[in-house]
Every structure is written in C-alpha cells, then in structure tokens.
Image (tube, rainbow, N blue to C red; front, side, top):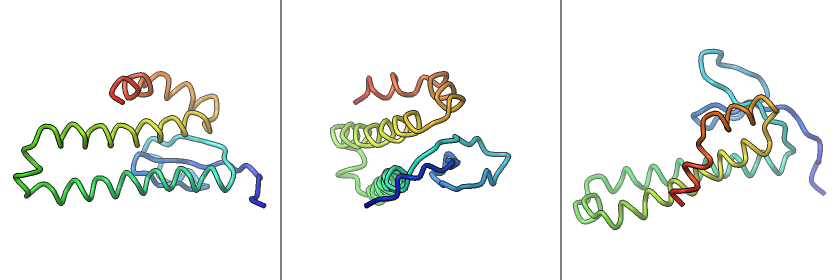
Length: 114
C-alpha cells in the first residue's frame, strides 16, 4: 500500500520539486502531496522535458520543422502536458498557490488550446 502521508513540497518553473524552498529568487508553488501524487507530477515534468528534447531534434529536419501540421500537433501535445502540470499544481496547491494559478489565468488559456 502506498504511503498516504501528505508533505509540503515546492515546485519551481524548471520542474524541480523539493521539500525545501531552496531558491528564493525563483517563483515557487507550494503544494501538499503524498508519494503517488508527487510521482505523477514528476512524471509529467519528465514527459514535458522528453517532448521538448524530441522537439529540439526536429529543428534540423526541414520535413518536420517547416511543416505547420506537425507544428500544430506538437503545440497541442505541449499544451496537453502543460495543462495537466498546472492542473495538478492547482489541485495539490495551498490556498496561496491556487490563488496564484487562478491569477495567472493559465488553466482556461491552456484548456482552450487543447
């Protein structure tokens, strides 16, 4: 059985998740989550990084790089992952984090692009 203990974590824009608010110069989202929820969030960030790496490899492929249809699919994939990351941060976030995500307006914008 998974540990249901909820701990406080801090998520930065790079996708780093830690139990200490390490970098004061970077904006951090404070969340409370159990082991499974943190693993899910880490997995989403891995997916985003992998997607961006794959995207970078296509930079020199004119067949893919200049293909608008491919670019639309690529943006849609990116937006799907970003939406899910922000949705998870919102769900797991403290009241302050929820307010910050709402203020940013990213969920409705990303949702429209899905």
